[in-house]
Image (cartoon, rainbow, N blue to C red; front, side, top):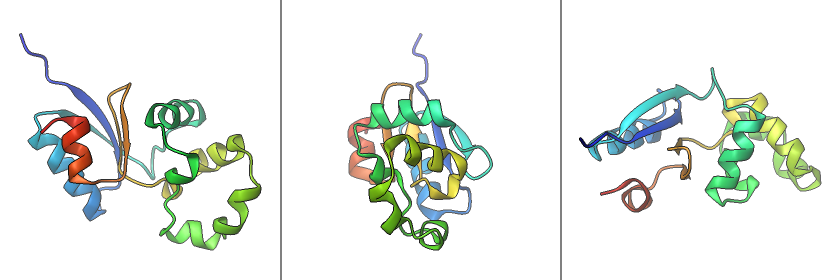
Length: 123
């Protein structure tokens, strides 16, 4: 019997990009567990695993166009911070994390681009 692949999507329901990503994942036949990223951001240990699995630099995880990022003047502060400090900061406020974040426990995507979703999550 073919079991539907499960993924977790850390997203914000009012975000159009997140809604498009959810639609795309469901259209690919995936069983999507939506997690509200502002209410339930991934914790420090989960973020460390997600960042490692994504293969992306930590700075790519920041929502650089977000209000909180700008208010905190993180563009100037991030270069002086350690990776652990950056991860603590991301875990402390889901609004700082670029969304959506999708994982199946081994693969991770950050943001939404249909070409990338087709490649990683299946056409």
